[in-house]
Image (cartoon, rainbow, N blue to C red; front, top):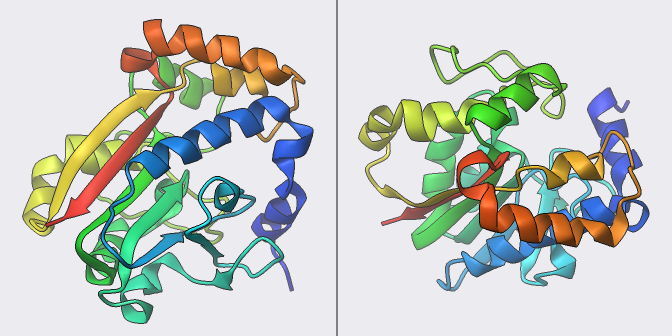
Length: 240
């Protein structure tokens, strides 16, 4: 029996063909991720791929999810990556997935075990700044709770339950705790991207049919807004 999250994923497969603007933005994410891939020889795996088309940008990346469908190479729970792929991974890719992981400490321990020395975790995650807080708190359909005390949260469906502030909590607010728990991880990149363009595309909720005009938006926001007001972070961790 399928659940709501699995049905949402199936409905989104091929979104880049119907929502050209959103597909353009995801392609930019995938290209940016590819620039940060470790060159250590091993496996490149995307966790929680959903409707991802990252393999069209980088054919070395295998797509996995907790649900098996026509868009996945194989089924994999992020928590099991260390058990199933110990010392075999060059790069773990998570696009808007980390904030859905209800036990991030357990995941990071598992990810650390899976990575080869010099391997990386590369994420796209919601950012926390004046603009993004406004959007996520008043427009977003997922919680953005910066007051969450611990790192864990209750989750019944990994695709629907989340805290979009989770990456900020762990890699900024609680960075000392993170470094104490994971001294083998080095945070080598964390930067804001995409201030207005994701909203203008309509995201996965609404197709604005902005099409290729999104390119102009990206040019403007890259130069004037992304650094301080980008709605998303590129985060890159490297295992020493």
